Length: 383
Ligand SMILES: [Zn+2]
Image (cartoon, rainbow, N blue to C red; front, side):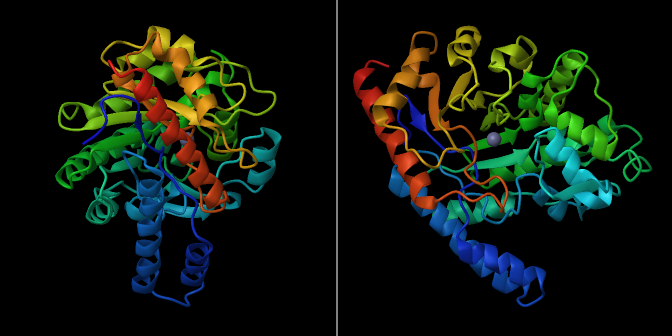
């Protein structure tokens, strides 16, 4: 049973144990087979779930332990993609990322054929469901994200002349995957939309950092802010249409601000962002320069939930105190009913395999968040 108010969850990824990363390398080098790697991945998923359950999290994930990155794994699972090093797409890929301060993963998915339906995450979900004693959340990359991260003007165009065509094809596969995830008994399906979140730093005529990088490396053209938001929202609606009442569906937005990013929050994407037929916005709001969640909360429609970013996933030097998290969440209680407020970290702790975050610090952050939720429930007992 979930608590009525201030439910806690995670965004998705959890720090991968060192032995799992070593097993990935040994598989890459042909020293172990898929079956052996699977034993490592199963154990890592068990550990990730146990860490979250021991911290007291209400809705848990498998920590994305089997995925080398939150985007590239789709390319490993679906026909129609291949995974290449960024340099194969553009010889100066790394310099381009540095210049724009927008590090995309080095192993890149690229659409190199027709996208065919196949299991993306239902296998992971079945395992997690069997192991966990709490309800499960599963994350999936959104069509808009996959379009920006994997449509290439030369390699993909013979199959999908326009990026939008590829996004539509992937959206169709996602619809089938959602149906499989519902059958697997998943409680929460989250579509990851960092490319939409990044638009906070874009203007009508100038793309944000990440789209500048994607444009230079993949050759896709920016459509202007209004049309980009509209396209992302329409694509998600194609995916979720008809499923809204069968399962809780959320959308995760982030942008990982830099020290020269503008101070702004997700209210910038309104009103179009509220046309999306998902129940929850899982939003980064603890990172510096993320603006004031009050601005978003004030205009949040009354049938929507907010999964409020309450601990910073980049700062591993400091663990937030429960008092601090309570104060952060209380800022929006005036505008959003406590039953519609969820607490989560800003983002996954390790969206890609090369992102290191100390597990003990991640655990401490979750514990602080769970304690904050407990105090909030006590204070807002009437909710
Ligand atoms: Zn994120």
